[in-house]
Amino acid sequence: MAMTIPQTMRASQWSTIKGGIEKNLRVNTNAKLPKNANSLPAKVAEFFPFLLSKPATPCLDFSGTVVATTLAHLKPGELVFGKTEPPAFGALGEYVVVGKAGCVPVPNGVSLKQAACVGVTGLTSYQCIAPYVKAGDKVFINGGSGGTGTFGIQIAKALGCHVTTTCSGPNVELCKSLGADEVIDYRSNDVLSTLKRSGKQYDLFYDTVWASPALYWNSQHYLKPSARFVTIAGSPSIGTVVELLKVFLWPTMLGGGQRKFVFHTAASKAADYEAIAKMMAEGKVKAVIEKVFELEQADQAFAHLKSGRTKGKLLVRVGGE
Image (cartoon, rainbow, N blue to C red; front, side, top):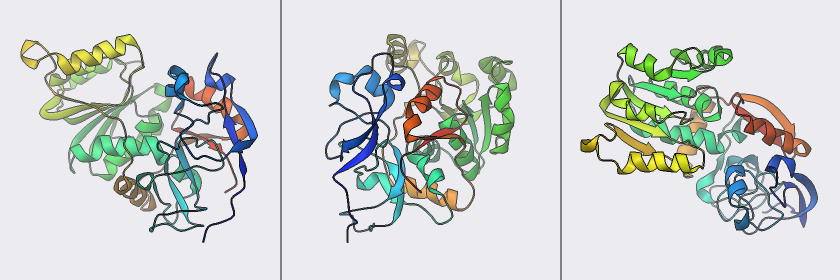
């Protein structure tokens, strides 16, 4: 039996991106309930605003309560988490429409705040690590203190791997507290030079920042022949596109990359969310939450996120818990 659903909802929305989304978000207390696609993640929205109907509601990650469902494995009143999918983005609204692959139950003992952080970054890290490693493997995570990195460290450790990561000096202890066996301060040590000097051979390089393509071009110095260099990052710029095209198209025999390169974009998969949920329920993985904002402060959350100095995740509380 479905719960009562109002005709409108509260949502943080924007109608223009001039000056950045963070300068244009406003709380609409009479927003239409989601039916069709009306928003995209912040980075995409800023570069392709013409794709969206206005006003648009950003964000993908969510946790909340089922109010109505056609899915047999869920029921009204059940707590769930995941990420929204086309044609229903808009997680900064009180109601979202979610597909089967992007919505699973919140496990016992895990809070809605914790579950809300998994949607994109937790899933991304799981999909970038789990398929490529086994217990005992050595994993290098470039960028360990952000949203994907903090999940990555813990997921790799939960899978039985030895983890080396990078971060700035103030975040070294955070990364160690999450289980990192070795931490490199990238501000005081050149990462590539450090990797070459170490003589270590890793089974997986998980790049969350794409700070320098040189790390890939020199990956044969620190990655085993069977290893993969997996990245999720890169600004939507011409320079980044050119570098990625080089990586994909430049043949190894003509001086191209010597190791397998993977550019990963997370795809919702219920089994992967369930695996992460199990790790969280067992206390092996937790979300690192720097700050929780109210819906009226969503603009501040985006401004802080764009600064590039976030430790773990930022949350926006849309409704009650």
